[in-house]
Image: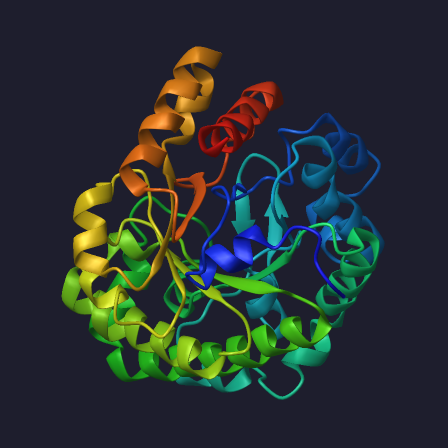
Length: 342
């Protein structure tokens, strides 16, 4: 199907664009009253994720309401550990909890790679439904969590400020850590390839906990596996977003992917020098700018684009939009990006 708006794909491929494309991480979610209305009817977050028609509906909401240049499939990075046999619960206001965690070689042996993709059929169906209902309006982004970030949850058992159990695991159980990371990587490659087959036009890999590792551990326990994924999924443009990994920008520039996402702590000019001119950059407005006045939002957005330049660039926040953000302020940001080129 021919896309009516392919700006983001052309930007990712390094092709010339008439204006800067824009989307937001976590654009489908609590900032929209329409999303909250659907959530209130359901038993919880996981019911929404595993019901393809509803997942498609909330995926498309930001395109309808905010006029973004891409949709990103509504799902969660933790569906992969669950598909491998490690169930999680999503607790309101607390986040994800894994009742059972990975501690031993036997725990890793129990994780399945063979049936994991079959267990994720609801994600692929959600992508197919979304693609049909988008009808070529904008591209659809698929995604997965980077192996280190998934290991962090699987070993820690929940979110954490320090992930000290997961980081201890890298020091005390190095061989097991690599065994687990390879298993996650193998499933993630199959998962992303199946997303593309189902209709995803581009992909993003989220390394949410990249910044809590020391640089040597990040190279050994994260970048090594991200690199495998980049090499194995050449079918569509892939973005790597590693929050907090300012120390690894030069290495990220060598990855076999099209786009590198920057968080709001990564200085733009310095990042371009370290990553290189051949990559597209994405980001990186501080999400807290959206709490300020409309004029301040426009000012910060203009300054950001001025620093990035209008080519080989995808406008976004430096992390997911915060759930208590006013949707009109989000719209202001999106409109400011579009007005810049005009």
